[in-house]
Image 1: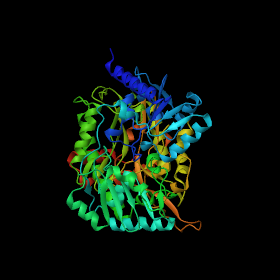
Image 2: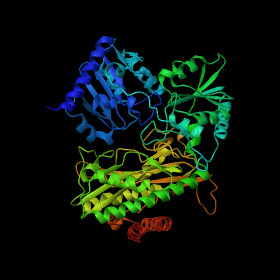
Image 3: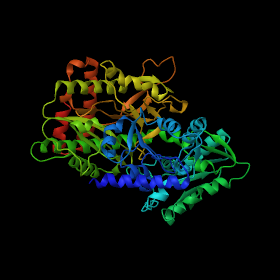
Image 4: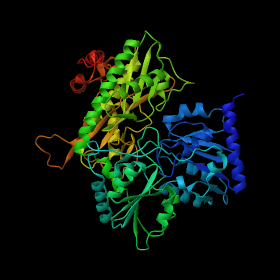
Length: 600
């Protein structure tokens, strides 16, 4: 008997019993929390608890007759395995931004029926779209239905870990300066008050960090600003007396976490409240009775543009991270063939290598160590119950990153184990060509970031290849490894996605062949002014400075597919990597570094 799947079927039965009690036809369970976070505290991992699907993105819908999980191509293979036998069907969607589940509800639920959702974890923009579709279908929406409160008997409580300050020199702008800058943006928008729910915005604005969420150094809180002060709504006990006094000196007071809604409801009648409709939940929006001004959070734009001082700290963090990788790969290549190595061992050894580096605070996401067929799942994660032995021949994909006081890292490399086939070399080289093509691009300042996506795909498209995920995401400064507003992807371009100096973004094209192998090569890059001689007469141009420092394995390259200028780029990159990392590694790491950066 498959007790795992029996447990998930029983949970679905409990959900359907709750639907009957409440007179509802269906329930929508998003992967979300009251802050619309990507990575969720255990209390809000309800979609995972109900379905068994452990991917970070996905939407669950349960009706009386059917249960469906909507997930994009990064998770299709993983989801099919994790959902098997649990009574939930996988519906494949094009991208994480897809709203196919909304259309599905509109067609599955009969006119006159109602569906339920917890408005406290449903984004305002998502709710507006959901209501529009359901209204056309004649389906009602109830937004005060927290099904998890009824069916999850041992549901975790709020995180209780303490909050701490991000201090100078790594915090390069004071809390008072950041608050002043946000208030200046409020004044330009005509706002008297500003409400922030996104936890990375709050952490950045107040120079605070926490550990409420795995991998991202953030904490659960809301913030309400006016022109002279600010209130931080946070669980009692998370801020000690010393930190509370430091916050008070900058006009920031603390209040209970659950008081945020009441504070919104109690705003003065003449208040003009600035909110970001994509970064606030419906439940909190419904508390507001004053004039609303809708725009992207000023802090979201500000924190995406790293200062020169922050960029300098990031370069140092990248060098320390690269040195840790050299030490790891020296161990790996020496141990390969002499001792048993699994995907789990790679995760453990990488973490240990990074933990020795100054400023290390933890990993920035769960390490992906994926051998051969496992690499075909872009968000694969090895577990004690399911992992591969690194043995025989094939390709090993390692996507990993770390949090340092001076920056956040994210890097993907692919390494050969034994002989590499001609087909594998071809895929690898085409992915590398796409990564290089975008890395070398110059573009006008203000270019909308999705417009750059096709540059990385072009070498792959030319050979009839493609990949289902975005090409690049913004990266925080000792904050979230996935950060907006810029995204190099197939997203619909919007004005706030304009590329500006100081933004850090990943470039990570890939190719994935189901049940065979996966290839992804990823560097982080910084937007910097283009070095044009003479200067352009057509406005300001930007280019990318590659920040990531780690060799790109040349044994997997089919040199016949590379142009001379591409070979020159690889050689120049490896010369930089060798120069920057040589002083930071021991003898074994240095020997490996010199071997893997030999010029083509």
